[in-house]
Figure 1: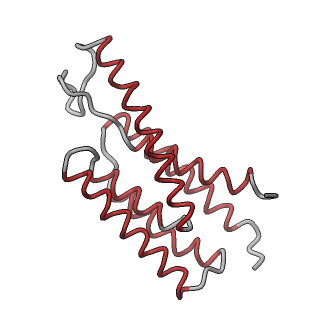
Figure 2: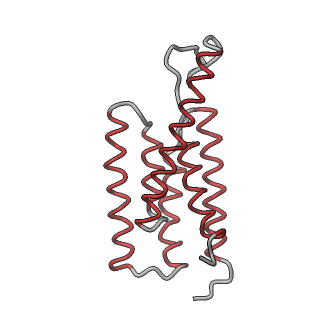
Length: 166
């Protein structure tokens, strides 16, 4: 289907939303439900733009997103991720094929681990200067995991353009 760049426009919009999510997460340690809903609700438009069949392909996308949500909900329950982070990762799974979703989760996890190490080092070097989302100094540093999620998703999005001849 020729869509005159509509698919690429949606992907650029998603990339912009991801950068915004990362910046907001760094500043406030939150990712809003509205932002997550926007990502999720744009996915069917993306499916239409790439002519993704509703059955079984779109249904598989939804199933994978539900699985990602369930898996990451455990990390929320044990305090390792915020609720907005979980919802954003699940919403992004709607945009990626099952194989790309696995790659996204691996890249996101690696980026999250590296980000955590950097935050811990900064916390140890400047213990009184690290502030939580309430502006108070604290013993346990918070990690803006939305940065890792955005990095992983942007990595997958970039592959579409960088590996188009593979």
